[in-house]
Length: 132
Image (tube, rainbow, N blue to C red; front, top):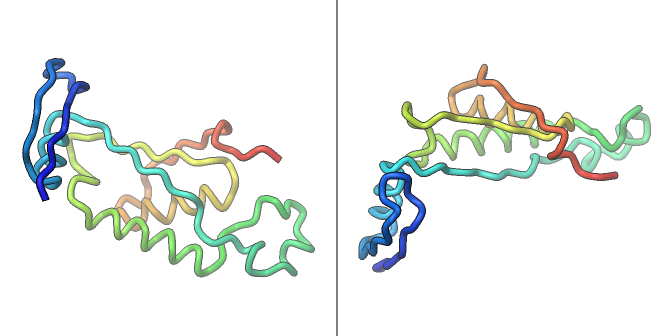
């Protein structure tokens, strides 16, 4: 498949440029120009959804941790991302942000472990928390 795109937002070149390349070539060229990549991820499987007995006894049933499967899902998501070209590059900073809910922080921690940076800082942001 061929791809023709209009580029307007690079820092090095504010002029419009047309590319007639494959999607892979286009992606690689954009990464070299300093483009920010953003990955959004929802938390993995929650314990309170798989074990109602836990939720019935919890002091914070709305803030359940991940289930064992959820921990594995998040780790595998990080490993999958690590296998994708351009996800981790030395010249591009990595920022990991999470809701303060325990399932979200656990998901972020498992993803960073899967990415091979298990001690990477996770920025907890209250603005990412769902409304009750």
